[in-house]
Image 1 (cartoon, rainbow, N blue to C red):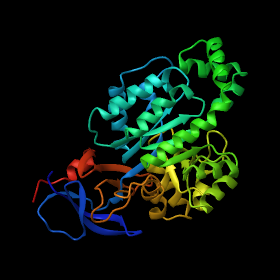
Image 2 (image 1 turned 30 degrees about the vertical axis):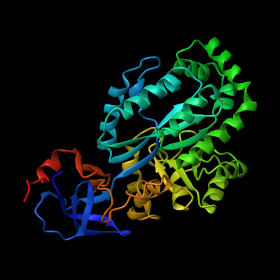
Image 3 (image 1 turned 180 degrees about the vertical axis):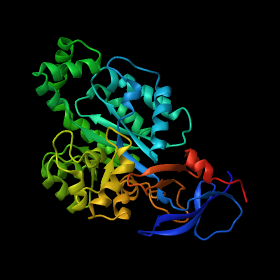
Image 4 (image 1 turned 120 degrees about the horizontal axis):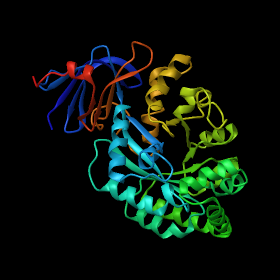
Length: 385
């Protein structure tokens, strides 16, 4: 791999922005400061040089797998397009939130197996990882989940329980039709399936214990999803889940942070100014120190833009806001080789022009390689010196 010099940019390192050069060698940051070593050079004058984005909760890839209800495409093709979107938005590490549910179709065991096989079949420029979103009532898939955790095919385990909500919403014909369409079933058959699954409530807690034990043995980070009470968060923490995704009450998020847990919210909430489900403002909770991690949730472009929106609001400066999409998610998932710019760290970088207000991505560097380079970036790139 040819060394690459990033010259003259405003580099986010050590908690602040300062002009510096970076030398990238063999996929890692070799020097931060002023370097004259002969290398291919990218002129970063006038640009921000930021750590690559780490997305620990994103399921937008589902739209590539199944762009319309019941219309599926090969998993390798879907992931190729997903990777292009990720890199174009500065995301160099992505935990794909793959739901392992009892529902047929998009979130089925069959889809789970196909996606994991496609992900592990090749190397990707973006470090694409598996965030298993385990549906609590998917008891028939427990052995598969345990085997995949033991085989190191999973990188993050999250405990989800949408079944009670689905059963409740089946009384609404419009919402019920959305669920049955996603599963590729007629409504009557889907309702019968959901009710049969829901009748196994007594088996849910023992399965959770087995999964948590397997994750602890494998050294996996764990998360809980949609915690609605402090007691629920405390229970998941007792299992080893130190990530609290999308708490449904501010008090839950406060308690999680007080206990040292990371709290994840969606960057679309920041960009839109509100939650699409009516929950709390992610921007306000980030400013209050309750939200420590922003994720793409369902729309990748928001991760690049959200920190700049927070910085413009004036409570957090850009370095603190950028930590929400780089250093903090890396720390939450145990990835201590990335998320910040320092010698020895993995060379995952985003070069951004922000002079016109909204950030504009110029280049994405993943593990020391140029992974995304627009026309402006090509004009800034010189041959080796």
